[in-house]
Image (cartoon, rainbow, N blue to C red):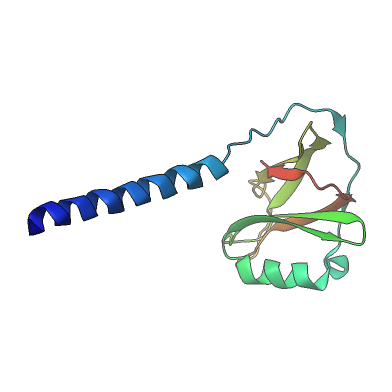
Length: 143
């Protein structure tokens, strides 16, 4: 008798967990971000002195590793892209494109190393860029 009750309890408990899992999965959805260009966006590179303080602190905190994040302030959208600690200076980040798609803002950058004949220092560097553009509540894709 005890075994039968125990099995019913396990089944009932498993059923409750199954129902909870189904409910949780029903609340989840997968959304595809379209990256086909609708229009180019104007942007400005932000000088270090003009980077909002909260952003500057976040960059300092995460500069050792590659990072990307966004920040919105006063009707502007700031996008930060960093490539982590490098052994020397002379690295550059080039913005290839910043554009808007149907449901996203897309930033494409490339990371360029020092030229072969370029003099570089022996100190490590932490290359990053911050750009600002018009505010958008769309998701941001950083490539």
